[in-house]
Length: 367
Image (cartoon, rainbow, N blue to C red; front, side, top):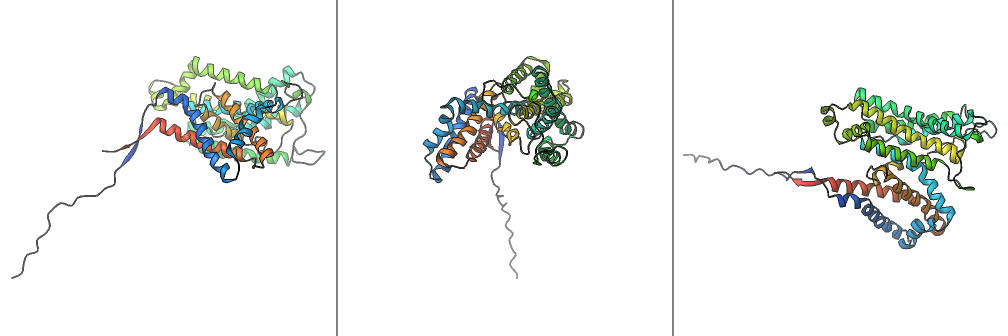
C-alpha cells in the first residue's frame, strides 16, 4: 500500500521589494529664496576638495576667485564685460524655461547673432552710431529668432522634442561659421579664418574710456527690464507663465498655447542673438571661430541660479562673470588651470538642479 503524497497547501508569501515614487510638494518661500546662496556655498565646499587634492589652499584660492577681481578698477570693469553676454543669454533661457519651452539652443542662436552682426558691420560705411547700433542690435535679434524658429515649428507642428533639436542646431551653426570663415568671409589680407573688420561706425560705444565695457551692458539691462514687465504686467506674459505651469491646463483655460510657444521661442532666440551681435560690435570687431565661448550654455547656469526670475539674472550674471575673471587671477597667481572656473560652474549647475529636486519633490514609499 503506497502512502499518499500530501501536498503543501499553505500559500506562499510573495517577496517584493518596496516601491518608491517621487511626490510633488510645495517648499516654503524662505527656502526658495535662500536656495541659490545655499547652492553657492555647497559648490565652494565641493570645489575646495578638488583644490585641496591639487595641493592648493582653498581659502587662498577663493581670495583670487572672489576678492582679487574686485580689488582694482580694471579687473572690476572686466567682470562687467564678461557678464554682459550672460545677461542676454541668461534672460533668454529664463524666459523660455519659465514658459515651459526648454531652449538649450541659446549657444547656436547667439552664434547666429554674431554672423548677422559681422555681416551688417562689414556692409555699414560711415553711419551715425544712432543708426548703426540699433541696426546691429535688431539684426542680431532677427538672426537669433530665425534660428530659434526652426525647432519651435518642429515642436508646434510635429511635437518634436525641443531639447534635442535646439541642442543639435548648436552644432549645425558652427559648421555655417566654419564655411563662412574658410570661404567667402576669409580675411583677404592675412588669409586667416576670420572675417574682415567691421566698419568703425558699427562699433558699440564705450561706457568707460580705454576699457572694454560697451553700451551692450546697458542694452542688456534694458532688455531684462522689458522682459520682467512683459512677464508680470501683460496678457502675453500671463499666457507664457500659464503655459510654463502646465500646457494642458492652459489649453483648457482657452489660452493659445502653440502661439505662445512660438512667441517664446522667437523672443528667447532673438535675445540670445543680440548677445552675439554685441560681442562682434563691442569686443571682437570681426567674426572668428568659437566666438561665443560657450556663453550660450553658461546662460543655462545663470537662468537656473536666478530661479528663472529675469531680475535675478542680473546678480547671477555678475557672479558668473566674477568667477570667470577670478579663474584668470587664480591661474596667474597659483598656477591652477584656468578651466577651474568651468569646473566651479559645472558643479554649481549640478548642485542647483539637485536642490531644485529636493525643494519640489519628496521620495515616498508606495503603499
